[in-house]
Image 1 (cartoon, rainbow, N blue to C red):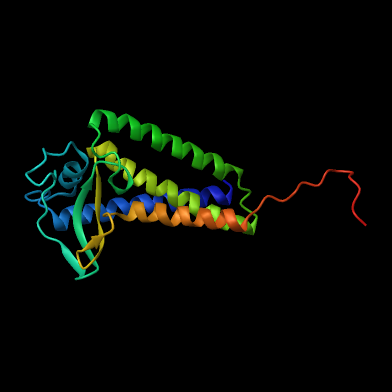
Image 2 (cartoon, rainbow, N blue to C red; image 1 turned 90 degrees about the vertical axis):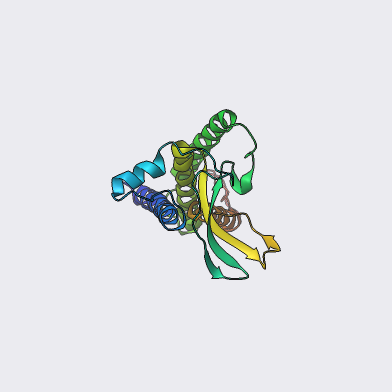
Length: 205
C-alpha cells in the first residue's frame, strides 16, 4: 500500500477514535445518561442507540455539571447540535435533515478521496494537502457517526468572553475540520500548478 494511503487511514481513524472517545467521556462525566449502567457494553449501547425524548431544556441527555477551564474564557459543557456547523439547519425537521446530511457527507467524502488520489505522495509541496484532507475526512466522519447513531452531534468545547459573547460549541471533529481546511488553504497558496513543457518544444536561449 502506498505510504500516502497509510497516512490517510492513520490520520482519519485517529481523529475518529479521539473524537468518539472524548464524546464518551463527556457523556460519562457531565451527564446522567450512564447512571446505573456499570458495563462498557451498556454504556456504549446507551450512547449509540436511539436517544430518550428531549427534556424540558431541549436536550436528550441531561447535564449534571460542567467544567470551568478558564472562568471568563473557556469551559467544557455538554451540548447537542442537531444541525450542521454552528447550528445551521437545526430548525429543519429530522426527516429532512437526515437525507440532506447524508448527501452532503457522502459527497464530501467522495471529493476528499478524489483529490487525495491525485496527490503523488512524494512531492514535498503536497504535505499540507496530505495532512489536511485526512483531518477533514476524519472530522466529517466523526460527526457523521453521531448523526447516524442519534440524530444529533455532541459538542462540549465552549469558548466565550465573560459570558457576553460566545463561539458556538464545538468538538474534536469540528477542530480537525477547521485545522484541515486551514491546511488546505495554505496548500492552495504554496502549491501552484507547474506549466507543462511540451515534448520537443524549442527552449528559450
